[in-house]
Image (cartoon, rainbow, N blue to C red; front, side, top):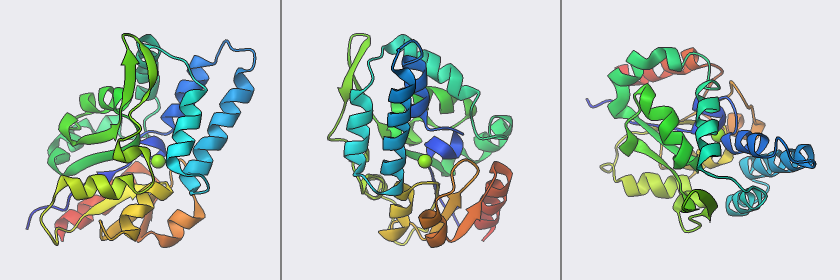
Length: 226
Ligand SMILES: [Mg+2]
């Protein structure tokens, strides 16, 4: 029997932080109002993740606060490489061995997620995320039409990926946008990943909870044995 495909979230799942919050800290480091702006961005992140604010609005309001260029995105990539969920970077061989079953679907941005994850063995074509828009080296916004820029985007992407009907899928994540995969019936098993953020609403509706990368690895290996 083919192994079950797994849909993995990035922010606060494969990565220990919310990458847009990390970008905000980096970009606003020298801004006199930086601390207040970062706090506001974190608040908007949480409202989006808990479902209290539409994802599209949360994303647009956060990005509108930030002016940044490609050099700062490269700095963010370096930073995120050191802020992966503990144990992930050491599991390079495991990732390579299981790469064909691992799909990343994130409401973050492919502009930094791909450079962080592909060296670990995640196939670039299996990473789906939002897309920034650039004017040469300066970011001028993001593709607001991308499915992942709105609520319900993750189920939409998984549907577009076109697995055969009745293919059993599994999803892993910490946020409401991940839980939507279960609520819409796109996946039959959902694992709440709580190593970095634990949201009651997500945990309550999850089939399982993993509080570390090693615990998640065990759950996946068990699912692949079925
Ligand atoms: Mg997340």
